[in-house]
Length: 289
Image 1 (cartoon, rainbow, N blue to C red):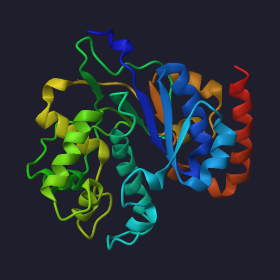
Image 2: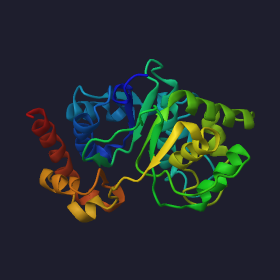
Image 3: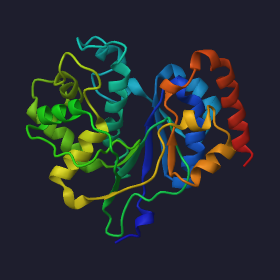
């Protein structure tokens, strides 16, 4: 048995250009506190130049439209689902997080980490027996569980939520889950289209990648998991402002393991030029450490 801290993992995140400033903090703090083998960022190809200038060499960029066969953001915007095409990107980034399980087979695990969430101190993801540690949350959204039952033909038993801004993924187990979806919906092109085509035509926020994978593991591979309560903060912008100062983040680290700065809480249209200036400033600041 290898020591648990030596189990290698990558970090995978999907990011829009509007979250680049937060991502500067995220990448720096991931490297400092979690020490992954690699940080992989899926984004639109048009963002590559700006992301490379701001983030530099410590990350690997992948074209979001190349990860899922026969699926691009433009293609799913055509689906007749309520709130599309505007909401299509929200679903697409969730599917991208799943798609990485078919990449880089040499590393068996990857940590899905939201691009708007900054880790504040070290966090382990495996116990001494090699079981994955899943962070519990309190959110409950009924449509997520209705979709789960449509996808697998069985209900998920809700005791707690898995929506905690991150999730450690076993690539082989996630492939097993996605293959089961594809098998149940053979008329779909692949697992990703099966998920989207199984959604109701009406409703908001109908699928969660975190709830689906977490509750599938809980149902079919309970021996692979252990659950934990970790203090974290979702209202980062309200508490610390945006962009946050390093002092604010240090203060927050006294109470929380990670903090989210959700884009819906940020006045981006009024701050866009300031944010880009901040991004370049952060690059220089972190490079000097």
